[in-house]
Image (tube, rainbow, N blue to C red; front, side, top):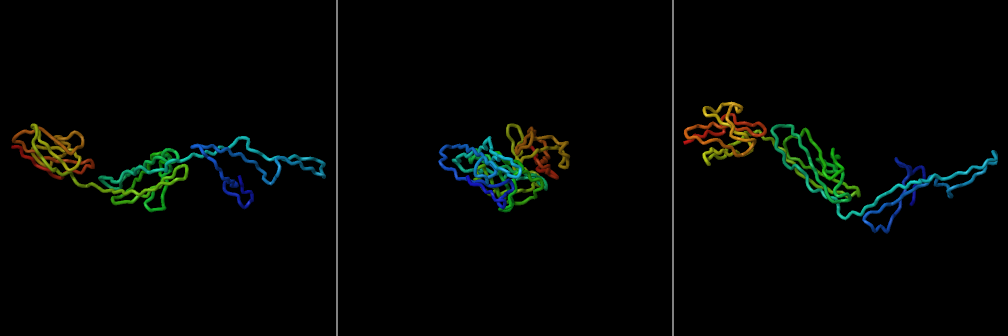
Length: 255
């Protein structure tokens, strides 16, 4: 092993030592490293005699008695970015909160890696949660639009995987639309173009949803109520973002 010893070669953490290690045949290899200081001493111990003081001094090199273990593992497969989610986000208002998720696999440690993201190539920032196989970054102030995300992940061996993913954010400020109504098994069935909660009033359209009669269990695109001939159903709906019909979504007259 060759070490830099000149004072001009000093680095932040000391002097650099390098060596080429061959004949590594196993999948995992442990290299044991020990060092001695005072490289200018050709022998481990020297004796110096001071004629003025008539004293003999023995100087020795300090040695690591405990080895530093450097592990080398054979990598059979390169690190892989399995997926990036989401690619599309629907929200009811701006700004939008988005949680970016990246999954990695294979590589030096079965998918463990440090991942970085950026909206411009070469300007990546480390994920807030990374170092494992699943990586997360939350954006709290995104606006509607289309974005390109550049993802870089690096495993313990220094292998790098890169990918690019699109992200579309759009704001839903439209009320649900009734796309079909029909009778089935003595039920009035109402279908909407998105998941919603629908209500009806028998007399008017300008009713408050909290005072209407529910046609939905939770949010759904299918809504129903009892079919009674002669009734007039004034139906209004609201989606998960609380976009509701200002008047009736539809008026159904039962024959």
